Image 1 (cartoon, rainbow, N blue to C red):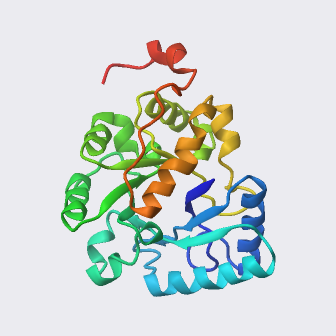
Image 2 (tube, rainbow, N blue to C red; image 1 turned 45 degrees about the vertical axis):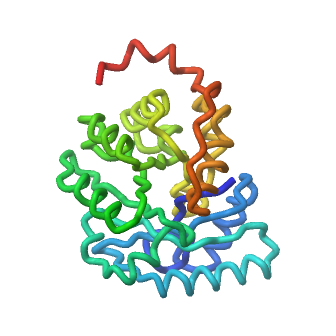
Length: 256
C-alpha cells in the first residue's frame, strides 16, 4: 500500500520527535502492509516548514530505513494549510507537491465556516496544480453543507480521508460523514495521517475492512495514490465495489 498522508518525519511538526520514533512508526507501517509513505509534515503558520528541510529529513530517514532493513520508501510532500498557502513563495510551493508530481495536499480549516477554499483551489489549479483535500470528513463546514465538497470534487479535486475516521477515532459524527462520503463516491484515497505508532498509528487496511470497504482497498490505497505520485490519469473507481453498508444506511441520509 501507499500511505499518501503521514507525519513520519522527526522533529518537524506534531509527529515523531526523534528519528528513533520515526523508525518505530515505520516498522508498524511495514507490518501493516504499507510499502511507500509520503511524508506530509504540516506547512502552516504554526509549522512553517520549507521544502529544503523536508527533503533533507526524507533523505536521512530513507538512509536509516535501508540500514535497518525496513521495507519502506519515503517520498517528500507536505500538508499545506489553506490559510498558509498564500504565504508560501511560488518557488517553494512547487517543491511541496506529493512525490514531486502535480498534486498538492491542501488542508481545509476545521471551522464551521470555510471562506475562500474554492478560491484557493481555483488559484492552485490556475497555477498548474491539482488538489487533494486532506481529511474533509473532519471539516465542520463540509459536514454542515456537503454540497461545498461535492462542487470541489466536480471541479477536479480529490479527497483523502483518514483511516481512523472510519474507526470512530475522531467521533461518531466524523465516522458517519466519512461513510456517507464513501457511499456517494466522494472518497478517492484513504491514508493513515499517522503521527505516532500508538495514538494515531499507520494503519489503513484494517479500518477499511471493518468499515465494509475492503473491495475498494486496492483502488484507494494503491491505484489512486500511485497515479497521484506519477502524475498520471486517476483510474476509474471499480463499478462493482460499492460499500456493502450503502443500502442499509441510505434511509438515514438526508437529501443533498
